[in-house]
Image (tube, rainbow, N blue to C red):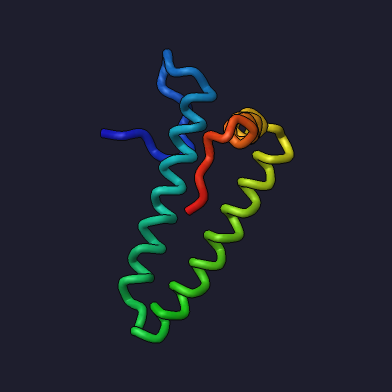
Length: 93
């Protein structure tokens, strides 16, 4: 039988690994609760939720890409694209 959430780590399992697994279980429970709630939405509630989630998801994407740009994680790709442009290896569509 499985360990209860919040229980001490099984012997031999690093504490950080157990904490991560416990966190995953907590999130999975939350996701299941959300799924159950969404299944009970009326058509109007579902439409409103879809609109809200689309905006939420777009904002999350914007924050991620802005963070990647600020951290320089896209610099190599930008340099490659600029090199291709200078070498006339780009086409317009």
